[in-house]
Length: 211
Image 1: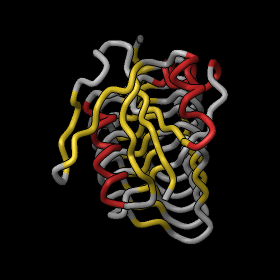
Image 2: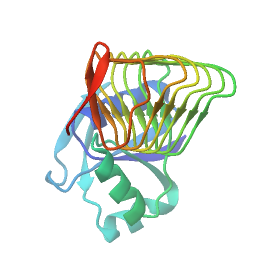
Image 3: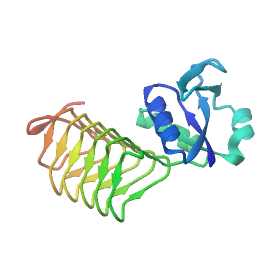
Image 4: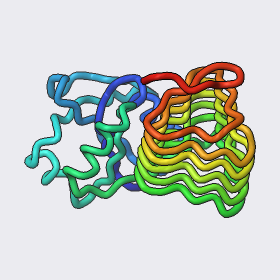
């Protein structure tokens, strides 16, 4: 069993911690968070307390780096990218025991697949992307780096979602749609056409709006 440390300690980080403990693939050591005091208890699961180990200082990383993998438990994509670039760490991929993955699905380093997620044949998930609770990702999708796919999102087949996209809760994306880089899709929206980069779309069907 490999050791793992979670960077961040908020709600998303705690969800990751829960999946790690259930899966038993990793041994959770604790959390790193500059906003919290060392030894502060973050969660208590199965009668074991998991605490803040410190922050992302070089001393802490040097202590754990050789024998530990890391995952970023922070929802903001730009922060995940900054940490990935700034620190040469071994990133773990966390996949919920309660998710379903089809054949030929690939998931890159640092990504998180939540409980109830379904990912169908031939889909590719790139690095440090979050696929949240009960999202349904159909066949031959490509989801880029540092994306956030909200709970209950549904995508059709052959959908391409490029880097830094934010797909809101329960949004639906039709077949063969391309969503360009840094695009935000509002909760509950229905996407029937290509979405341009650096844009906001929402509604049923969704229309382009100003960020």
